[in-house]
Image (cartoon, rainbow, N blue to C red):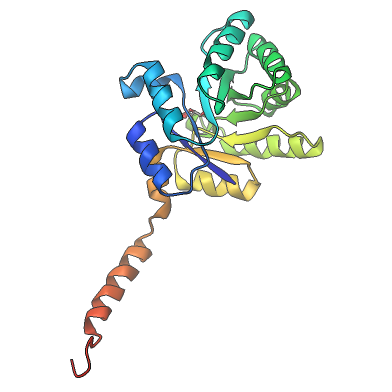
Length: 218
Ligand code: E4P
């Protein structure tokens, strides 16, 4: 399973990449707004750090405008993936961009049927938003399960990015279901390595190590 980081924060991206486990990045307008920086400078900086797919959202609503925006965004770097919300106009744009070999990530997916349509349109990736479904008492991971079953039934090549991740259990569940990718906020990446028994174990080893004679006769 590939791991993406879900952020536009440059320090978080650098820190996560230094761990050597990150394969790509997803951003969205809210994450970019949180940086307080100018859109172009954030994206350019991300492109200078990240070697892997970088999802950047097109904000236009009409087909022609989405296409225009996608063309502009893909000029920035070969790694740019055009993130497009699932709408009728968005689907048409995904179809056209797939014919032009421009990668797309169809976002704001909340049902398996939406994911099926996105795949039919030629999406490179789909992003079901798990946490937001859990927030309204729907089991988000059930949607991922159904999307994966449908894609397997028809040998669909579109990759599933489990998004809107809130905690380490989402990553575990995504891996057990065989999701292609999970995109993770920095805070949750930090949680992943942690376990209280690891901390206790390290402490005990250090205490015991102090008791080991270090020199002959010591
Ligand atoms: C994914 O591509 C989105 O940027 C993100 O996962 C949304 O997460 P949120 O529901 O925490 O805003």
